[in-house]
Length: 592
Image 1: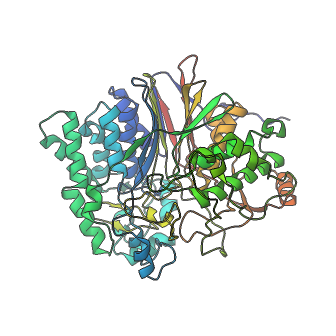
Image 2 (image 1 turned 60 degrees about the vertical axis):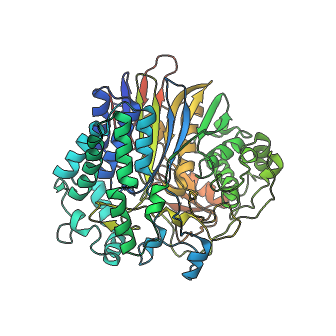
Image 3 (image 1 turned 180 degrees about the vertical axis):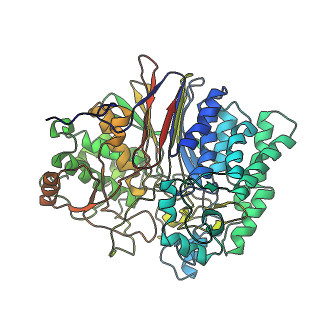
């Protein structure tokens, strides 16, 4: 007898359809705070910022803190702007190769461990939120933060995912390295709380309240109030507190670093896939890995292979290995190095790389980097892969600690998505007086002279954070995002193929089983390298696994290959909005 489908069809959760606005995020209260702003007449940008601040309260165990960073893709229907926004914090002025080598380090460490303070990055996400409000928002910061401050001060219930993440020895270890850490706020006499008991974060609420007070003291217009709040965080009382606390544990972060920081709007990197155009971030992120991989995959008939078949998975994974080889060799902040971005995403270069894929055998390690300079208008020389010093790990890595993602669309035609991240409780230093951690993203730099991703003052590390906007015949149609470290671009590509090639709805695309290669230097310290490893979630048949092993893949099973994924879509014909929520964690979508 055929198994009966759920009342929602083939998915465990329903697609959320709406006309006036949609939001999807990593927690139901994060989504609710954003939806409140939409219901009060705010636009998608207002709602996204409200949800972003809210996520710092509701999702502190999702590797995200108010003192961290975020990346954004946005489309403003009024101006027609389609932009990337980098809220990725940069390296402090004292962060140089010579400094770290003087500490007898061959790579930049993070926690858990006594040297975690050496990876502290300039916090970038607050400036990005305020910049987004200044340019595209309509609400005051006091409107945006009203509910957020209430929940920080009055509390909200501990939930199962949060408690699962708190129940990690690494969090206790890092709190012991930098006492008291987060123990007094997130634990009850050193033990886990029960689901449903209240988590109160008055210090974080106080930090947020100060931003509103700074805005209210300025008697000018909305823009002046937003500037006053930014100045407080990056130049005033909050900035000085951040520096005092950071330097008290040995951080090299300075007040000058905060004063000089600015989030950056930029034109996106664009590539095509059929009639669709994919827009993402430049090589200060790993966003372009997806574009490179799609260019390679255009040379194969993926649809005829069958969704998630062994040949389909093998082809995609081998294409990813080729793109990750180039990531290791060529990616870095383009404000500091000449990057052959045009060559990396050239169709002819994709065809050249595609010819290297053996349909009968997996490449056993990271392939050699290619030569995108040949296809670029810029000049440079071909280089080898940047391999980490730690290449023989004893345990497989597992990206169950993914950060969070937020997507918002409104009836005016605006769409915006964000992947805020950084400052995981197990990795960073928690400052109880601030109510948050500071990001440790400096760990993603290397200490190789002349490498595009070598550490330099004021430079953005080549982050794992990505998200995308997809255009259909020139019109913005979808936002795509999925947290998960080095699996982020891989998961996003699978979401794109699920929707564009296999015509899945947003919920089907998110719930479909995912896979990911780990056959590259891990972006996170200590940069372990799992040559030939292919991770599979639940949902793949034993026959598929046997076939993949026969092709030479080293199979491991993981609970998730990216978690917190979101596809948000505007129907180009009807204007109807739709989105879903990832069942892999406490995600929630709302529409009206």
